[in-house]
Length: 103
Image (cartoon, rainbow, N blue to C red; front, top):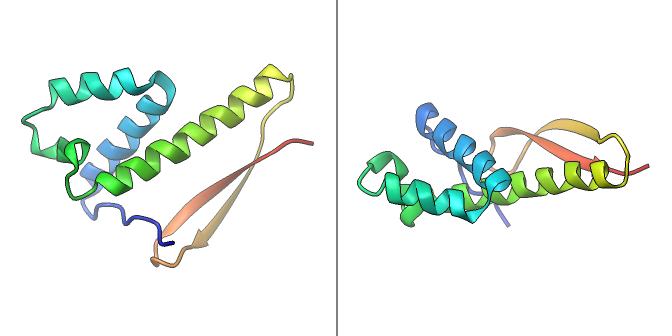
C-alpha cells in the first residue's frame, strides 16, 4: 500500500500537518469546528473530500498514534523512547518514521 502524497504546496502541507496534530490532540470536535469555520475556504477543501483528503486522513492517524504512544508511556510511568529514522519511502519522498518502544 502506497502512502498518500503530500501537497507540493508547502503552505498547504503545513496547514494539513498542523490541523492533523490539533485534531489528534483535541478530537473530532476540533475538526468539526474547523469545517464550520473554513467551509468556503479553498485551502481547507481537503476536509470535505478534496484532493488531499487521503493525505490529511493519513496524517491524523499517524498523529493519533503518536499521542497514544506518549499517553501510554505517561500512564505506566515510563519516559517515551522515540527512535526517529529518516528513509525514502516508495513515493520517493523523505519522511521521518517514529517508533514507540517500551523497554
